[in-house]
Length: 223
Ligand code: ADP
Ligand code: ADP
Image 1 (tube, rainbow, N blue to C red):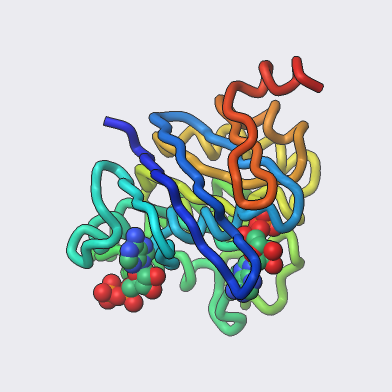
Image 2 (cartoon, rainbow, N blue to C red):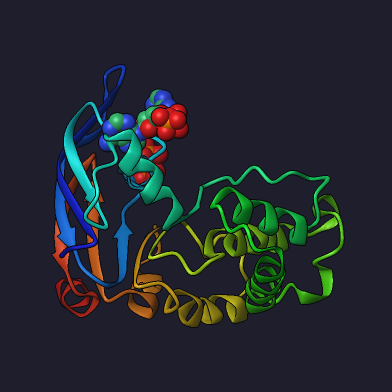
């Protein structure tokens, strides 16, 4: 069963067709959404993250229907989301924030949560600052806190909006192994070289539509 089945999604804001009939389906692996600013990437990712409903069209995520409230809850437990501008509670520490996200996903075992929270924060290189207030961290560190929060519990479906934002070249390289922890990852980027480095398949969006679907190698062959 495909992890992601997206059928004819539309979304209009005023006169702007943010999504103008987007369809695709994808199985496992890292799937890249490539496109310029305004192409509709964030709008699509928000639908896959179940925080925005389409005007028309349908989605199935992990075989479940986000339009159904009970199924939406199951999807959210199994999904990790890094929004475009993550709002982090500045007075929390990275440890508290990631632990809190784990609570929201109904991981009730405190010892398990403590170990898992440490694991994801170590995996993004934040072991040394996990008990400092988020407001004292650099922009790149905040991005990694948000990434760790998305990854807690090794979600089956990871939805990442511009995950490389604010990361230095070394940290970008580390993204590759982080992404391999989830069976399906959908990530946006406006950087074609990132797609080649991180993704197994790629969808190129322009003006609310998918204009290309294939592998990064096939896309490079067109350039
Ligand atoms: P991308 O992530 O590819 O930059 P977006 O999905 O953010 O694209 O935006 C697609 C289009 O929809 C843009 O023209 C954007 O201005 C518009 N848009 C997105 N969200 C809103 C919103 N909440 N209100 C009004 N217009 C929006
Ligand atoms: P509930 O408590 O019922 O889960 P929420 O407010 O948490 O209610 O969720 C409702 C949200 O689910 C809405 O904001 C809507 O945007 C979102 N949603 C996401 N995907 C869909 C979908 N495919 N159909 C309907 N609603 C959806």
